[in-house]
Length: 448
Ligand SMILES: [Ca+2]
Ligand SMILES: [Ca+2]
Ligand SMILES: [Ca+2]
Ligand SMILES: [Ca+2]
Image (cartoon, rainbow, N blue to C red; front, side):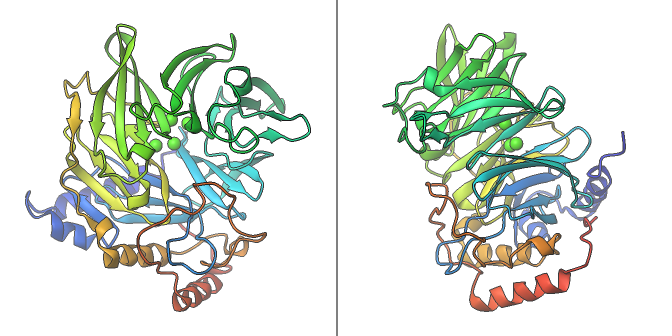
C-alpha cells in the first residue's frame, strides 16, 4: 500500500505549527496568519480535516448556485486544497476517507446519484457509479466492493408505492444483494408526503454483518435494521417527538462500556448535537451540546481523543469541541458544509462515548471565534476559497452560472437562508469566470 498522501503535508504542517504557535493566550494572531477561513485554534488538530460543501448559494445571490466542492484544512486551520467535484455535480453530500488514502464521495447529478472514489492527490476519479436515485445524501462502501445506499424520494407513480429504502449494490456482480423497504414497516401517514419526499432517509452506516443504521429524517428517528430478518432491531426517537430528535442528520452508532448501544446525532432542527445511550432497556440522553447556538448541525463525529467534530451547516463552520463544550479547533467554510472527516481517525466516529469519559450532561458552546456573526469575515473566507485553483474546468460552469437544466431539486435542503451577502456579485462572477478560463488545460495539483 502506498503512503497516505495526507501524511507528509500533515507532518510538515505540524512542524510549522509547532514553530509558530505562540504560548496559550495568543491564539488570535496565529489564526489570522492562517487565512480568513480559520477560527479558533487553541491547539493544532491531529490531522487534515476534509469538509464536503453541498454547494448552495448564499442569500442575496442573484444567479444560480455555487459549485459543490471538497475543502481540506490543515492541523493549524489553514486551507490545504479546494477540490470541486466536477462532472456536473449538483449537490455534494457525504464524504468518507478510505483505507488507501482516497475519498469515497456521494453526490448528485440532475435526477441521479453519482458516487466515486477520488484521489485527492491528483483530483482524478478512480471509478464512479451512477444510480437512478434522486438527491441521495449518503452511500457507504461495504463488504469490499459493494455500496449501501440510502435511497430517498423514491415514489413509484405507476405502482402507487413509495419505495424509499436501503439497498446494497455489488459492483462485481452488478446486482442488488440486499434491500429493506420503509413501506413494509411504517404507515403512509407517518413522515413527509408519501407521494413525494416521504422518509428523507439521509444516512446509512453498516454496523454489523447484516445490520445497518438508518436515518429517516422525516420520521424524527434513527433505526437499526437487519436485512437478513427484515426487523427493526433498535429505534431512537419517534415521528413528531421533537424532544428526542427533530429532522436529524448523520447519526453514528458507538459502543460504550460493555457494548452499550450509543448514538451520536446531529439533531439538526433542534440546533444541537446529542448523544443517547441505551441503559436498562431505555434510551437516555447522555449529552447535549450547543442547543440554540448551532444553526442546523448536520454531522457529528466522535474523535479518538474524545472530542467531537461538528459540522454547523448554516453557521458555515466546522468545530472540534471538548465534552465540556469548549471549541479547541474551528474553521469556516461557506456554501453549506455537509460532512466533515478527520483524516487518520477512520470513517465517522471512532472514539469513546461521553459516559466512558465521565462527561455526561448538557453543555454550552464556548470559545468560538464568532466569525459566523461577522459578514465581512465570512465574505473574505468565501473569496479565499474561490481563489484556489480549480480542476476539471472543462466540466464546470463558472461560479454563479445556473447548472444546466435549471435550479436544484426541490426540498428544504435546496435553498436555505444563509444570513449573509454572497461574494457572488457580477464583478466576482466575471473574475471567477476568467480564473476558470486561465485554469483550462492546467492540471490541478494538490498543494503541499
Ligand atoms: Ca462521512
Ligand atoms: Ca454513512
Ligand atoms: Ca453516520
Ligand atoms: Ca463525518
